[in-house]
Structures are given as C-alpha cells and as structure tokens.
Image (cartoon, rainbow, N blue to C red; front, side):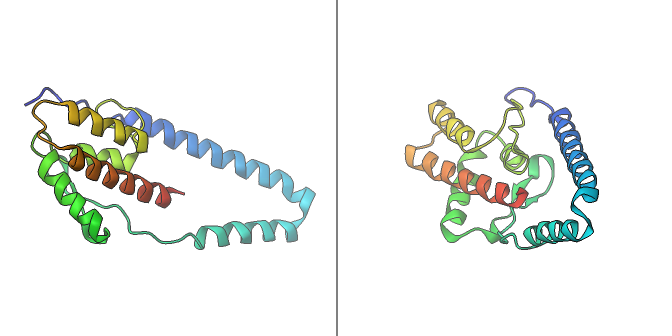
Length: 163
C-alpha cells in the first residue's frame, strides 16, 4: 500500500543475543576465578544475594502482543484506565495508515522495525512529531501527545521487565 515494509532486523537481535551470552560467560569466568580467592562461604553469600535480587524485582503488568503479522495488537487488559483510553486513540488513529504490528514490534523489542534504530522515549516522541507533520494523518496535537505518553508508558513497562 505505502511501499514494502522492511524485514525485521533479526541480525541485530542475534547480535544482542550473542553479546548477552558473551557477558554472562565473562561473569562466570570472573566468579569462578574468584572462588579460590574468596572461598566457598563467600561465594555462597554472593550467589544468594544475586538470587535474592532476581526474585525481589517488583512485578509490573507485562506488555503482551496478541496475534501475528497485520493482525498483531497489544493486550490492554493490564493497562491503567487512562492508558486504556490512550490505546483506543492509538488504535483509531494509527491504523488509518498502517497496522499496529509496527508499534508492537517496536515496543516489545526496543527496535523500530522499518529503520532498525533503537525505539526509546526519544524515538517515540520523534515518531509522534513525524506523524503530526504528515498530511493524511488527521491527528491533533493532543491526540499525538496522548499516543506518545502511551508509548512512553509501554517502553518504561517493557524496560522494567527486562531489568
């Protein structure tokens, strides 16, 4: 309709996956080399603190994507009431030109699907400004602000789940 949508940048996802594996391997090597130096008792304390830190992370409503391809959308059931209203605005306005797949992929992966650039709060604001300038967008400044606030909420919620 508006040109061919670029393919998803799986190479960047694989790069990040390999980077994470490398960092975990480095941490393992560091801790295993310290084991003889610290002794087993100290190592147990360190591991218990790490385990406690992982378990005691506050629980937030997960950002869930439903469907696949053009029918992909977000599940707003865990959203606060004002964000549910903002999601309704986003569904009504954004789907006039494209599906919500772009938004779902950008929010859940942190990478904009067409450009392959990082999708964070600054990028969400930039996309809002860009959509406001489009002639056929038919969006007011207030609607763009509501949608950007929703995207910021989703980005923050997704980032808190990754930490």
